[in-house]
Image (tube, rainbow, N blue to C red; front, side):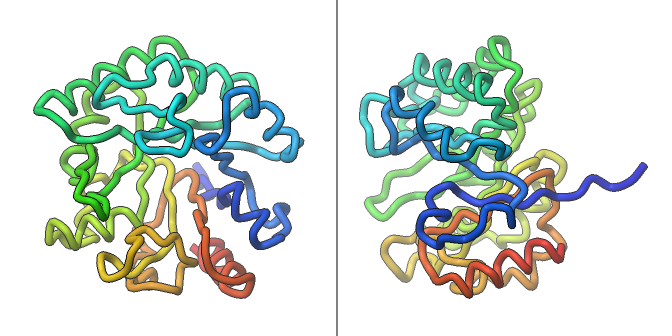
Length: 251
């Protein structure tokens, strides 16, 4: 049986920033975290005929009324609305953050909420690993073992492995970045790739192109294997974007 080709996508905000032809990518990841629900469908019109994945609002996203925190049972009705929207626009998958770590019940809450969501929607759900932010707020899914526990206790939920987030957390917890890949091997179906300078700059999570930062993607290239990979960039220039795309398509 032939090996499934890894599909390369880009975050929707990068298309506007770089003016780069979306035909270069297999899909676009549309973030609705910065949009009100009444704006979601209109945002999709800009990507007519383009395959989509959806990035859901998260625990500290800009619009308070749509924030989702599965660890603290916040925004569960919003989650259901996001999944219905994804179904309507034929989104391939929806990316969720787990939320803030505030009690010993947080991981249990995430698992329970994800199990309930699996029952109400057939859209693929992927949960994203995070890191402790600049103000010291700890989040669920910083350690690879936490992510593993979550997906092993769900029926069909898989992992969106964010390499930039994992690098920051690896510095905070003194873990080898490669260990994240090894622990989560087999559960990663979606990836966010970008670069940063770890905890030496603020913000930590700069979302630079692949070759601007301290993450050695040359070393990691053999580990970047999954169904979909999103070049999730917010900084840099067009030339760096082209280099990043070329690298991903060479894998």
